[in-house]
Image (cartoon, rainbow, N blue to C red; front, side, top):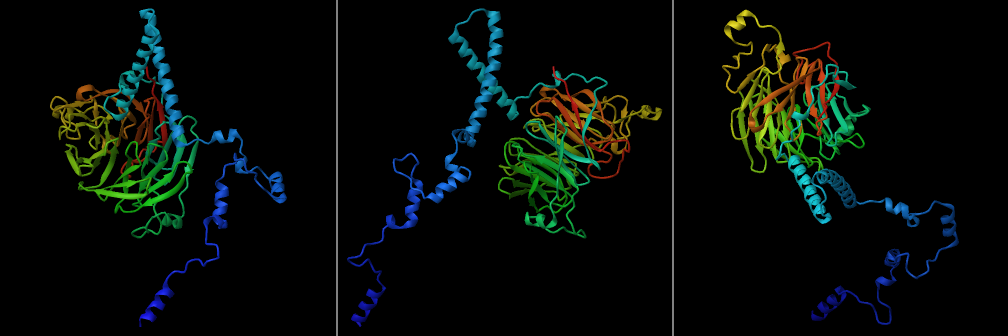
Length: 522
């Protein structure tokens, strides 16, 4: 038995190289030999052998990658080198501004030591950069409203893009160069702000949509609805998100204008979208009363937020992970995502239609009774209410004067707490609903739109004292979406003959399209 076991062990043991024969070596393997040869630098002293056929190929064909000229190699730039180059260019621009300001001060003061001058210039550059960073983060409010000049009577909105049906959403890129618009007919258009050149996004086929993650349409429909209700553009300008009646969030690549992903999950129409500033984090609100969080870069679902008791209509977000939403349940919710908590603000209006952040602690809302509310995170009630901000102008009847009441049920400003009553105005049907509101980022300039034939521009007063009307810009139709340029130099409006979420009103004289109005700053 022992001998048999020994024989089995010997048979199963690995056999080593026999004596007298050369063992296996990596150096002799042709695979590794070729790898070592490829790793050698062309600058080595060894001669590179080549056959006549290979030489003929080199002479007849185009030069290979190894024979690139020095100019071609210099064209290749990494992402880190590009960031460094952009930062150095921006720093040089700021230094030039600081130098100009310093030269003006030196003329008044007289001669100054060169070392002291350079020190003052560096401190001034640091001051400018710090100021810009605070304004960008929303900690300091830029004073733009006081610099805006009142437009001339000849200045009007200029239509840059036309749509067949009402425009439901507009969005601007971070650099204010490109604009995006979507309408009820399902068209999504990408246009240049300066030239007005427009390019249309093409919807993929049903097969491609399913391959990108879309699920089969629910109900009687056999195809996905292309009716778009909302748009959002990421801060880097790479991703465009759209949502509509097909209950999906669609992701597009702005560089190629191609559809890249469809996020299912909502059980109702996707009514509002927003990207968190500086990130690829996307928030979507729906008629199913939920807010869903997605990652556009990873094409992934993250979380769902609950709280509303009715359909969501508008959503907004800044740099912080805080989401502001309004719905038809007469409430506005501020979701604090990391803390998994929320604040609920109840409005006196029957329904809130739109909302917008001023900064991390203050925000605005518009309601269907024509009012605009100014809110603070420190109070559950509005700090200030502008009554009938977009009412139709018409003379009051004697009966209304006797009762000192307005058709929407509100009394005059003498009896309204913290409110302003626009004299001579009253609300008329859906035309007076505040359907859109926008704030120029980190500034005191705001605008609101309705269906009464004008866009109102407001100044957000300091210390939460409310809103002060600046002027009105005439524009026929329902203003369903507004967007300010980051510089405050122009305002974009998405307008149509019908409201964004229905057809209970119609202005036949209005034009369906995107209109731009330039603002002159002092």
